[in-house]
Length: 227
Ligand code: NI
Image (cartoon, rainbow, N blue to C red; front, side, top):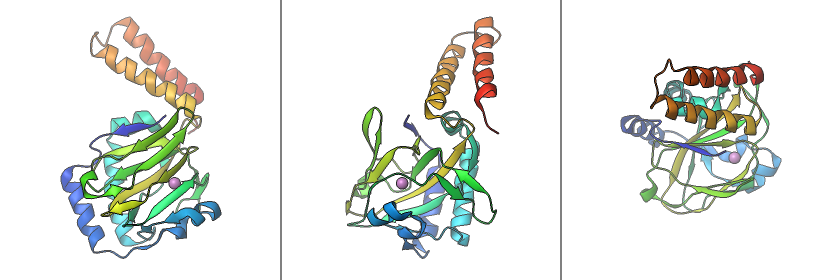
């Protein structure tokens, strides 16, 4: 399941993040890549443990905490600190799958990557190429979103970023361990939640059908969730 979530960041938050990133030092993106991904990865990143990454990551995490679209699509248990990358002209990331387990910086804990997210920080008209291409069981999806918008997709999917041929593409990206490990179950809960929202808009909240469906949604989470 691939879901796009509009307006995760306000325009002034995007502008602030971009201003800070303009002043920061970038390193070769291969520092956080595994063996296979490292051979096809050509981009730049802000060092994960740098003060800039932490400060900007907090802004992203705060925005996620109040975003109902992210909550219902990812059903997050824990989110890794967001990272920041850029693809200048000629940079690309060939086909790969993200590593399944990542260390949570500074905690000694590890997180299973169930959901991958890319939060776009550059307006699409400012660069050519740089599309995120995600392959899932339903085919190939090409994603390029306005600044401040985000895509979430199963971390089990093979994906790539096509070469940037003009300009520079900046983004934040991060992984989430979901309370619901299985993508298909997560997908069913997402569709059920959307349907309940749509029914609630037309019926009274105390209608027994609304109450019953809402109970069903929560009971499925109760049954399936790892916390
Ligand atoms: Ni990736």
